[in-house]
Image 1 (cartoon, helix red, strand yellow):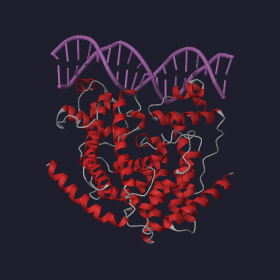
Image 2 (cartoon, protein in one colour; image 1 turned 45 degrees about the vertical axis):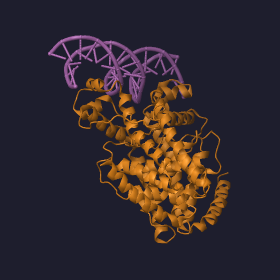
Image 3 (tube, helix red, strand yellow; image 1 turned 30 degrees about the horizontal axis):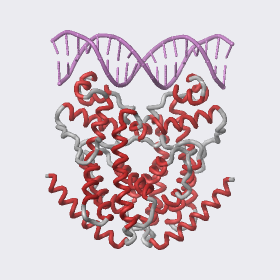
Length: 224
Length: 224
DNA sequence: GTCTATATTGCGATAGAC
DNA sequence: GTCTATCGCAATATAGAC
């Protein structure tokens, strides 16, 4: 099963033709959507002819699929790490949100055009729909866990999963693509907004935020 | 200016051919998106031939535009009412969210395909982009007001506007169209989630919810 | 690995009969 | 108000030379 434990998308050389196709396509998908972007548009942005695209990707949808894998795969991986850790549920959730938002802000491609129901509904994206469902299940596990442990007030977990998804998604939509001015506070702001709404003991938020802040720094070191 | 004070979309007879075009198109836009839906698809769903559509709407984009007007216009109107009322900021916000969510759940057409950046970016939807911006300004005014009055903790208002939008939008995405099983708790849940995150004095949430519950009932009477 | 040329399909919209 | 017929165009993808 794709997007299962330990699965990782293969690394991309962003300066290669393949990498530049992915970058340009991601920007166009974000601006005009999957259906609004033609293979001619992508080819023009990469400064090659349209049929040359098909040497690097078997079809237009393979470009899109690759971008979803690059964005979703690491996100699922990170959440698995949070679930395996020995920490409070609120910490897990807070850190997971902050990590996801930061990843969105620093990754080289533009993920804003990737999570469109109308596109993902196509037959060829069945695996990606599964991956997204898996990610949502992970979130629900954290929310249910926190609820049963008495850390969170009792909202319906499927509702909270969606609400959190909305906050993540809108944070994604906000910024004008990865190259734009990065809002450094956004990861913590987004995490605060969701967790504050859930916490029974709101006073503990400051402490949880400091844990996240420290660990965000650590995780950054680990990558470099 | 369109979407200005007092503006209202003209009433629709949902059993007329024009109304059935709007209903069918809204469902298809929600399932496959604006670009993924052809005028032939819409015509087939209404059981007329494709060129007959153009007797009722000058172009495909006029169908889409009409749907956005029907959804957005009343929403802006309601928010103007909230802003004009003598009530606490938290009450305004709580009631506004609850009203919007309920409206989504009861209106006959499917609004899930309407707020796609890639579609609204088209030249022909400039007025609709303005209307959406106006709605967002209204929300920011409530958040800033509540912040300055000391009712809300100090989140950046542009961030909160987006977060709230995300919650609204995801609540919209959740339900399988207006005809599906309505979740009666959703309006209050969504309002609670956002307002709880903002409130300085969380204990007042129960009271605010009761005010909203009562007024939701009143407003329902007023419509019938 | 990139190119030119082209096959094939589906799109939005119009013309004009009934 | 709906129909049949059709125009003009842009889409994805393939074939085959270089």
